[in-house]
Amino acid sequence: MAFLAIATLLPLMSMPVDGASAVRCGESSSYCPADMACCTSKYSPSTYGCEVAIGNLSDVSAGCGDGLPKGDTLCCKMGPAESPSRSLANVLVIGDSVSIGYTGPLAKRLFDVAKVQHGPWDVSDGGALDTAYGVGCLDRWLVTQAQEMVQWDLITFNFGLHDLTNSSHCEGLYAQQLANITKRLVALNTKVMFVTTTPFMPLRTKGNTVVEDMNTMAQKLAAEYNLPVIDLYHTVTGACGAVYSSCSICRTNPCSYHYNAEGMSLQAASMEAAIRQHLGPHASLLTV
Ligand SMILES: *[C@@H]1O[C@H](CO)[C@@H](O)[C@H](O)[C@H]1NC(C)=O
Ligand SMILES: *[C@@H]1O[C@H](CO)[C@@H](O)[C@H](O)[C@H]1NC(C)=O
Ligand SMILES: *[C@@H]1O[C@H](CO)[C@@H](O)[C@H](O)[C@H]1NC(C)=O
Image (cartoon, rainbow, N blue to C red; front, side):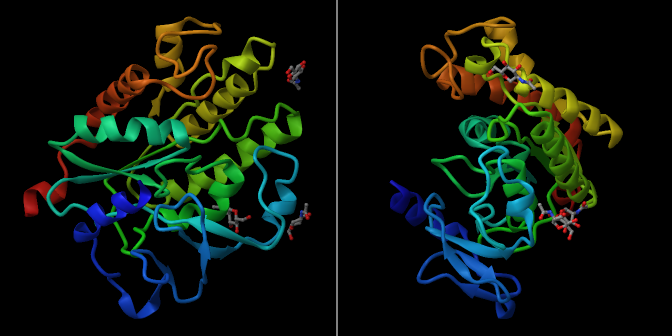
């Protein structure tokens, strides 16, 4: 499956813009900057990631969320698979498997105005994982797997479902790490939108409000930076109720992290409406 996906994408990819400073990972379509080694990343369709120096980030984040492997380097998944569009707006969706789920239907809905890609390039696993992984790997996801620079017209981002530790220490660290990621995205001088974390009712129904707490902190942060918020949490509770254990848009019964086709389509519709509203006319449409 992964092999087929790579084979069909290849004609659309180009070599690194700055070829001299990027090194190809094996015989794959992925490259790393010359100062980073290629590493094995099981869930990257090319099977490669780039090894990034992360200082003491794995110690700082220990015990919270998914957690990072111990050590002062991290194998970061590759950025988006394909070259940017030269005629449509380029939209980047950063997030976990829930966002991987709605990126396909979202791309179809926005076909007339935007090329939508997911960062990291991951079609089958947790994508951007937790905020610690995001702090370590964000820069790798802003360039394509061929290390092409992209002037993104709009970036949406979410972290949350991999940061599900409801201690005040870990929730505080979530806010801190999300602030780090937010500042770096805001500095890109592009349109940035925060997406709230979708519900995780197996915890909520037990009185664990870690998702709701994180959304409150994230929305406060988004307001500080004047970032529009796409409220997928309420897209889901609007369809399922405030607190529930099963719902027709969930992939499983009782509900867990993931959604069926109807749920992904519902989320894609919310994303589409917000993105169309904020994209506006963009330069590349006028200059091509
Ligand atoms: C990580 O490094 C920073 C800066 O050097 C230091 O202040 C902090 O205590 C370290 N944290 C851990 C958990 O090692
Ligand atoms: C984000 O965190 C990294 C790792 O701790 C640090 O090197 C960087 O300066 C931080 N960036 C911002 C904008 O806070
Ligand atoms: C964390 O969740 C548990 C239930 O899973 C709850 O009993 C506890 O009070 C929560 N702690 C905090 C700090 O929210």
